[in-house]
Every structure is written in C-alpha cells, then in structure tokens.
Image 1 (cartoon, rainbow, N blue to C red):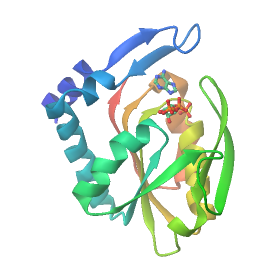
Image 2 (cartoon, rainbow, N blue to C red):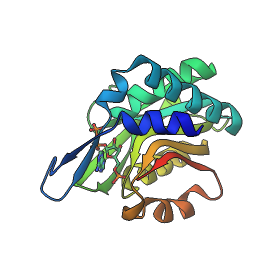
Image 3 (cartoon, helix red, strand yellow):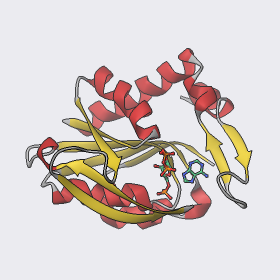
Image 4 (cartoon, rainbow, N blue to C red):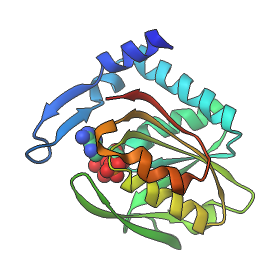
Amino acid sequence: MTGIRELLLSRIRDVADYPEPGVMFKDITPLLADPAAFAALSDVLADIARATGATKVVGLEARGFILGAPVAVRAGLGFIPVRKAGKLPGATLSQAYDLEYGSAEIEVHAEDLTTADRVLVVDDVLATGGTAEASVQLIRRAGAEVAGLAVLMELGFLGGRARLEPALAGAPLEALLTV
Ligand SMILES: O=P(O)(O)OC[C@H]1O[C@H](OP(=O)(O)OP(=O)(O)O)[C@H](O)[C@@H]1O
Ligand SMILES: Nc1ncnc2[nH]cnc12
C-alpha cells in the first residue's frame, strides 16, 4: 500500500490560488492520465467497496463520477450519480451545502436507492466535508444505509473528518492520502 500511496501522491498536482485566492487546489488530472495509477486507485477503492459490504456505489459530481464508476464496475455493483441541482430528469431528493469555495446543492434520483441498499460514497477530495455530509443525508433520506465513504485524499487541516464522523455514525471513512 505504501508504494501505491507514493504513486498516487506523485500524480496529484498542487495549483495555488485556484479557483480563488488562498485555495491550494489538488488537481487529479495527472493521475487520471496515468493508466497504472488510475487502475491501482480503482483496485484499492474496489477492495474497500467489497470490505464494506456495499450494494451500490454513489459518486459525487463531477470528480466522484470519474473515480466511482470504475470502482462500481470492478466490485460488480451499481453506480448511482449524485449530481449538482437541476441535472437529473426524474423525481429527486435535494440537499444544499457549503464547501471550501462557495455553496451548492446536490440531488439523487429517489428511485435509485432503496431500504435494501448499503451505499459506499466515492469522491476525490474530502475538504470541509460539506459535500460528503450532504450526500450522507441524501442517502439516509432515500432510506438506504451508508456503508462508508472512500476518498482519494483528505485535506486534514479543514476538519472534514471531525465534521463527518457524527453523520457517518460508525461507518468507515477511508482516505488513501492525508495532506
Ligand atoms: O469537502 P468539501 O468542502 O465539500 O469539498 C469537496 C468537494 O469539492 C470538490 O467538488 P466540487 O464541488 O468543486 O465539484 P467538481 O468535482 O465538479 O469540480 C471535490 O470533488 C469534492 O466533491
Ligand atoms: N483544495 C481543493 N482541491 C481540490 N478539490 C477541492 N474541493 C474542495 N477543496 C478542494
């Protein structure tokens, strides 16, 4: 795992003052462009999906789609997109939240999750935890259980883990990297 972590970390680019002054943006596009690194990441996240007993993978728009979809395929699970407001055509559940730079609202198709589901949420970055917390609230409101949250990287100084732990209620929060 140490070798994989070093590989993943080496493929994340720091971009200062993006999208606004004071933010150090963690750009995963070099990782996505490296097939060995992207495959290794997908394999580790799929192992987490299996270990949590998840029945579905939720990916958070947009980067959570890119990371979550191969995890769902590898683990043999359905993939459910949680989208920014106004993008899903069917009946939705919505949740507003704040993030490191601004505020937003996310939605899921109400019919995509049932009381029989255990859901692993996948995303690239855990920053303030606002996005992940809103996704957990959506999943619970849909009647499903949260199996866990798996992210490529956690920005430890923003305190997202402490914010999320009460919402996760014992479900695991797996961050492959902490920066
Ligand atoms: O922990 P938080 O403070 O909520 O921040 C983390 C979220 O911010 C980024 O998404 P963003 O909303 O920028 O969307 P994008 O993936 O479409 O760029 C990132 O991909 C996470 O989803
Ligand atoms: N610093 C950051 N880099 C990349 N994605 C983020 N989402 C929230 N904060 C972020």
